[in-house]
Amino acid sequence: MHEYSIVMSLMEQCESLAQQHQAQGIEQVELKIGILSGVEPALLAQAFETFKLETICHNAKLVMNIQPLVLQCRDCDQQSQVDERTIICPICTSNNTLVIDGEDMMLMQLVLDT
Amino acid sequence: MCKDCGCSITHDDVGHQHTHGDHHHGQLHSNPQLNDKKTLAVIHKILDKNDIEAQHNRDHFAAQHVTAYNLMSSPGSGKTTLLECLPEYLNHKFAVIEGDLETSRDADRLIAKGINAYQIQTGSACHLDAFMVHGALHHIDLNPIDICFVENVGNLVCPASYDVGTHKNIVLLSVPEGDDKIEKYPVMFRRADVVVITKSDLLPYFDFSIEEAKAQLQKLNPNVELFVVSVKNSDSMNAFAHWITKNLER
Image 1: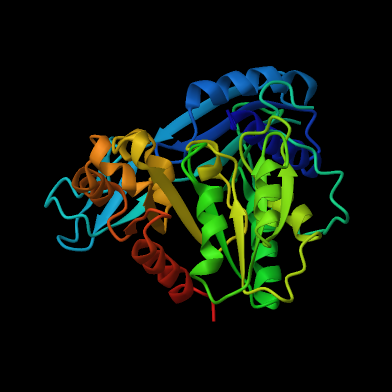
Image 2 (image 1 turned 120 degrees about the horizontal axis):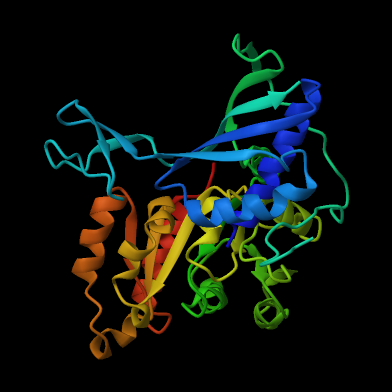
């Protein structure tokens, strides 16, 4: 249940960005959640709805884009997208891959009320 | 302000605050269809602040020539016992930062063995973060030591998301827990630099398959090193202690 502390960090970022851009409020918060980021989207959404009330995000809608793994295979040189939590290349079954995406949780975009 | 599990800890109690550069620069794009709304593209990590503090901790360790290891596992898999037994096998001096919800029992156990240990009580927080470790570092003299172990809160989920500023992640999995934990908690085992299967003296009594554990790690984290250890078997302890020594930051 570390989703609560993640939402706290997110709110802090939103507050400071809103202030920086003289926004009156935040209408939408868009996140990218990697499937190997260690965050459960449903819990994150619940935490967001709970904590937003006392912040600048109180009217904000949360949009979460779930990011599958993106693997760059060092053997067959192909890039592929994988929905399972494995780093095995679906094309040549090598595990000599580089994870390019799907391990991070990122704030991607805010829609500000100005 | 912890409303539920209490993970969100305010850090006002940290002795001093460091100001770090503001990394938050976004670009404003006006949406032509809506006059009073602006879409701001940001793209930064949600745990950005923690990551900056983690790097700060790492710099602090580096300045004192200390290598830091983050020990993670479920509760009861033998983190403290492993640390209790390590002085016998390590020529380097180490200290331990302990994280638990309540009590200083683990730190007391280590101190009783002559190991310098400092206990963080997280209240109800399920993981350590870089700020908590920073706070603890003010209570540990890094000068006489070569290694600092951070024994994280026993939990295979939450600690995986937080960089605490250590150099390497050591993840323990004890034989009674079962080999399927790797598949069940992929994020934790993906983040490991080394996996230590503990309580290996119990292998004859459990259906734990080392081969299955290896096969699961191959799918998630193929370059991870694996040790099968029992504190009652000095050869296995020597092998693991050798890994610790080999991975010291120079």
